[in-house]
Length: 188
Image (cartoon, rainbow, N blue to C red):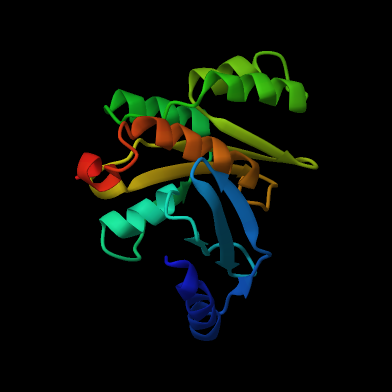
């Protein structure tokens, strides 16, 4: 959404639905900062992430400009086995977003993983985060017509949203946009 609309929509959702706001997260996009605000039910069964940026160069701003306003850019689904889901998607011809190789090098330096886990993550383009004992796994499809994509997540006692991985996703998606000024033309 447009940056100026964010407070209005937050008020709308918190007034209409029985949801609470989480703290604002600033996410680094190759084109600038994206402000991300989550509203969710107390049990976490419904989560809505609102994104806005004052920079016209972020992917979310280009999505708005090229598609003439606010809209749904992606939908996330839960899975109980991210690796089996990735395998099924690939078998059905769904193209998953390629994650830059250096992400896994950084992950290895940052988080102590079980032997073989890093290779399994890398081989499936799975992003990973850990909070205490909680683990979070994410995969994304490449964008479809109009810039829309799907996210699939597996949570293991993890309550966050993988905010540490958002800049990686944005960088990977930006790599797919050959001409940064033609986001909408390329995606249509």
